[in-house]
Image (cartoon, rainbow, N blue to C red; front, side, top):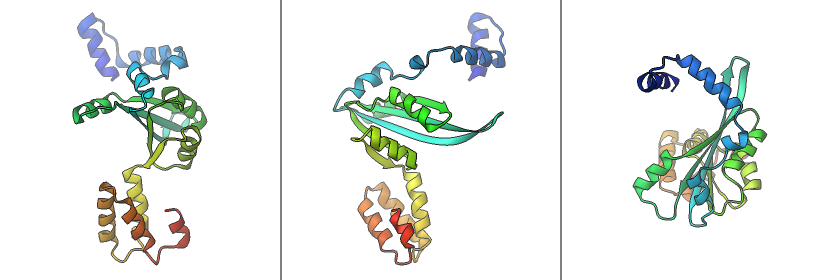
Length: 207
């Protein structure tokens, strides 16, 4: 990104500046910007959040990032908004127009930032997609009580793969369940998991 800025400045302004200098300047300016201005919904997102017939997705994940100070906790949130009338083309545009909030630090500080981007009292239909982490599901349940929570497909498959180890034909069983998930046949997936007699009791409770 900073490399592109270097070429842009030279092409349009005739100024030669290294990408490392651009990085340092941007970083210094960013540190002095008011945080309230950095994290707030854009005009279009703000309007859709107040429309009961609109749908706004919240996607949240966390990770650890290696820095010069060692491994640091990092959180990332994303919002995708759809109006009441949207075609496939408009859906693609909405995906491209996603708004993000990132935070390097603990989840409590991240929550406050995300709630400024996606206020809990938004009137739209609220849907959250995550990896099922306890801190995410508990927070969403408390602050967005009307929201629908969805465990993303890949993490759902990861959990099913563990259950498949106890099924008679693990590979075939998992293939069937993955297909059913994509076809919204969750009731059949749950039924097949419960039918695995060798599945440890404490393992089955998690499902």
